[in-house]
Length: 165
Image (cartoon, rainbow, N blue to C red; front, side, top):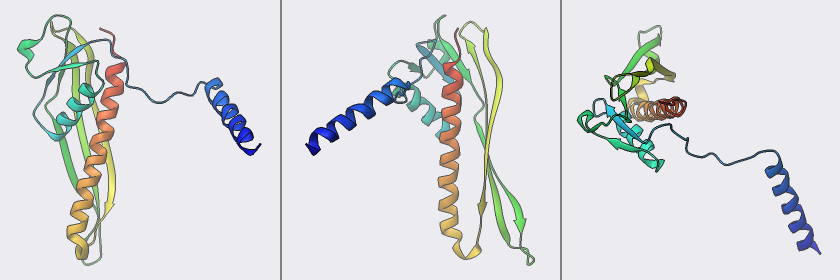
């Protein structure tokens, strides 16, 4: 009897979720099947390449000379990583940093028609700092930069999904 109730409750919950339009997140649908990444080999470029290839729908080309008329080209000079002092103590020791990544790119077709004008995505986060824990704060900064980088890659993926060449 209890098992029948549980089964009935699970079926009711599943039908409610299906009825409200719930879906698991899926890879975005792109309006192109091949893309050239014309940018320096950085950690962000590597992650972007992996995300694009991971969709299973996009072929990522390494060289713009391989591009055909239906392909798109993502051009960037790379990202800029900045670490600036936000606050200091009365004795002049750093108390807080601001970590920032800027990524500028544009998207065009292989024949030069612009699909997305030059766009800059900036992500930043504040990090507390202690001289006594300098090594752990360096490791924390690397993890925070990785998180900012992943967020930028996801934003680029969403913007690429809106393009219909």
